[in-house]
Amino acid sequence: MIVKDAQRPAKGSFYRPELDVVRFLAFVLVYLHHTMPSVERFPRAAKALGHWTRVIDSFQPACGFGLSLFFTLSAFLICELLIREREYVGTIHVKQFYIRRILRIWPLYYFGLFLGIVVAFLPGGQISDVFRIGWFVVFMGAWNITLHGLIHNPMNPLWSISVEEQFYVFAPWALKYLSRKWLYVASIGIVLFANLWLYRLGLISASDTQIWFSSVVQFECFAAGILLCLFLHGRMPRLGALTRSSFLAACACCWMAACYFLHVRFYDNGANPGSPRLICGYALGVAGCVLLLLAFLGAAPKHFPRWAVYLGRISFGLYVYHDFVINFTRRLVIDPLMAATIQNNLVRDHVTVGLSMALPFGLTIVVAALSYRYLETPFLKMKRRHAVIESQPIGTTSDRPTEERIPALADGSRQR
Image (cartoon, rainbow, N blue to C red; front, side):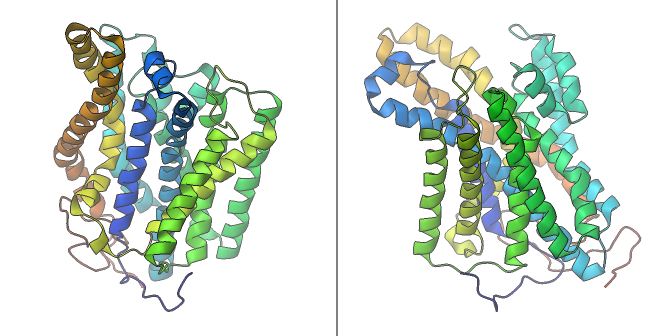
């Protein structure tokens, strides 16, 4: 339920520590999606699991909806911040919005692309990847993958950033000029178009890569985030622990049903499940994202450990670096170590699975923390000077921003 008299945060700021926790949870899901064992990679270990193999094979792609969660959360937060800006200062400063997004995303994003180019020239890399990375430079990475397949490079996950940037092209303009009624209409229109596109992809038996990496398909998540923001109307839900737990369980059921029963993530060696299953499966994926957000929104900060809030704050770095760390630890540490020390094939498979999931996770946190401190923080401080509604503290694990205020605009004014 939504309590109508729920207290709004002070004007000039909108920071919810629980959203940082959601970011960290989204990253953990993506990380599990990329590191969990599959039947193809560890057939002996999978055989030992017996009938649980199919459940695990469904759980692994279900974790991939963590990326959909990132999209839904991003749209919700962008919509909330821009609506608050419009209501408080009378308009949306689009130029300031783009400056903030550039300062937040581009430094780390282009550094990730640079690392991908370096990897392409290292032993085991493919120099041909450099041309395809050029598509990522102009934020067309997702379209390149749908046309030509995955890039075997650790910067591959950055395709999602290109989808986000495509969302930013029209989001501030729509929120500046459209009323709430027309924002509802536009968002529902995006959902309908995404489902029509899914229907077409089912008819032509498109591959999983052509579906999952499609910007049109993923835009359903952005539309859902905007609709959730409009529905809440600036207020946070006040829910009991049982209700929040039920939403989390419902989210898990939605994602598992989409993958276990509807097979919406069938990868390129499987058969397209058809238009009805695709439409229903992706709708369940988006519904799960909304349910998870509702389970966290409005929860008291005291319920979340500060380390989880901090890890959510550096989640962009966690996402950018995790595939680099996974690839390097597997190639340079785990695989050579296992081959040299453990002779039993089944034992080696199980130990390899454990190390492949645990070791890169810890190293990714270290790398992301260093990146946040030395690469991202200087740009975040510049970004803060262009803020109209403050949304996140910098370089601290405190639960609230250091000030509740309306920052000055670029011209020094504080319009109301």
